[in-house]
Image (cartoon, rainbow, N blue to C red):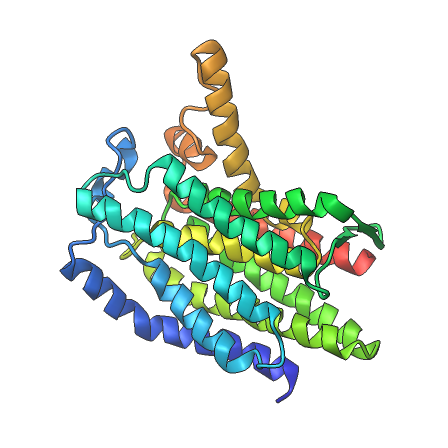
Length: 336
């Protein structure tokens, strides 16, 4: 099957599967009384109390189905990306499940969640380090240069998975925010990977091209499935992705970047995830030092809400900025 047709089918199949799957997930969550418990200090969101969670299944399962059908069994990277996504999804699911069971917005203890993330990140880091299609070399955006990090690749890869999973989780605070920015992220990476596949194919690096193709299918599948999820998650949301979806998305975001040897692109394309993470770190450190706050509330999107900006406006701006970052990311690859 023609590669571009496979990419198009991946988007369409995952989108349609998500659209069919969503009502069943929402209905099941309601039957199980799996409603989101809103923290009492998030006053702007009290009307969202009880909205069904576990919505991450709406895009993760369709993306996996699409990847398995269309990636091709000659490759490994797409399926390893699926595996690490499932690993982080399981951590998020346990967190969500405990929250629902306890009827509080407190799931896994901090050390339990961190232990799970550290274990999964360590495993995928070692796989990446030892895999001949990934290795220790990375592309430098805009420069056209490839550098070999050697042992330094290990902390870079490990931190990328830990940071990305938590950054997406922090961004998941408004209807359609994490889902919308992630859809643009994976859509852009799909284009980047399609371009890389064409280059490798023209250079007759066929084994490398096969692996990149599977990554492209995985990325396209997530982009399509997220569009189906957004149909039900846009304001007012009928379902939330929960940690089940957010941690999995962050791991998937790191996987496509690391496996394609473009980890630094995360800082450009995932700029809104980065800012969410930085705003929380700044808030915590500054408050501990001065007992004062930098932002009205962290992460950053809540600060904008408390400044009186409408939720839909914030989400639209985040998506627009990510689109611009996507164009810059594409330019960085063309330049290099």
